[in-house]
Image (cartoon, rainbow, N blue to C red):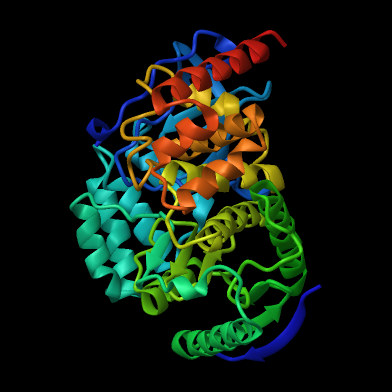
Amino acid sequence: MLSLIKREATAMQAFEIVRRILCTALVALFLLGAPGASAEERTPPDNRRITLTLPIDGAQVTGVIARYDTITFTLRTKDDQAHRVLWNAIPADNVNRYWRHLEQPEGDAEALFELGDLLIRHRDGEALAEMAFEEALAIDPTLADAVRQSRQGFAPDGTPRFVGVADPAMWGELTDEQMQQGVKSLRAFCEKTQEALNIELSLYQSERFMLLTDIDAEQVQGLSNKLAEAYRMTAELLGDDPDDNVFVGKCLVVVFTKRVDYIRFQRDLHDTDARGTGGLCHGFGDGHAHIAAFARNSARQTQHILVHELVHAYLHRYKSAVPVPDWLNEGLAEHIAHQVQPPPGDNLYLKSRLELEGKQGLGEGFFETDKLAAWQYDVAGALTSYLLERSEAAYPKLIQQIKNNTPADEALQDVYRMEPRVLTQRFKRRLDRELNRKLGQ
């Protein structure tokens, strides 16, 4: 149970639409995204649903925008077919109108910047993008550099971040004094945050989490329950005692009602450009882990994001400071997040099968990159599910070997007896079976 501690005032050329799946019931449009592109998915409130008709696969398809991100939206029909469509595939005027209706960005500089950033990538969207940028800059002139970067095609990096040089003494079993000092340090950071942002925040505490937020208490309790569930699931999966505490004192979780405050927090307290992200995890060399996000339109979305970031924080603290490759880090985060708080109607295997249609392997650099493309997160999550399906006992051994500084490819070969090429082949065959099962229903 959480206790309240205190309250203080304080371009279509850039993308392509992947081949359609042969079965009409599963036709979808998927994005092959530019590296680093943000695709943090949202669900519109019930009172902001948009119904539209689009030509898809030679037919006029009518549905509602059920989900959307800064690159695509999902059109869901009455018979529950889902078609994922590029914003760039519809007229720029419609993009501007629909996005403003969904996001209600007036008065929100960050939301207006996001609209401009979306439109600047549309082949006919430059004029509308500039209007959105001007509105954003009129509210917050400090966004000038971000606007300049957007015009040049840059995008934020949403990967978990390691900050500073790791102190090995802060990993492994910690003393009571280290744990108490960890809590004291986090409290001081919370006070610094409230002073720097000058907004009214409340500080809550549970056994393993310190939550600084301006969301209401009812939402806090629901979020606390999900974080506790995710912590236990992650610990059990990795072979840890779920009743222990892996963190240095506690894990700091900061949640803002307004996106603009989340962006300011990341910029001013973490020196991080968080534009286009829904949440971020920072792991520090002194062992601490900070998670931050802003509240989405639904509590379910917010919880999904924070559970995902919690897994990054756990992996930061697990065994050693050695980083886990991005395909495993994002993969476990998505797997756990889908278990604890799944997005509506999502099947990671099926979704990954559709996203990989027509692609070589699992996408460029999947096993080597330290920053997966946004669309590869689902694939990484499905691959983690597949590894666990093959052997739940083997998976923690894989992570442990990597944390002991064994190269990931060697650990994979030793534990699962597969190199990445063979793993990819077997995984894609598993996805084919999932698609065939769906088609046979």
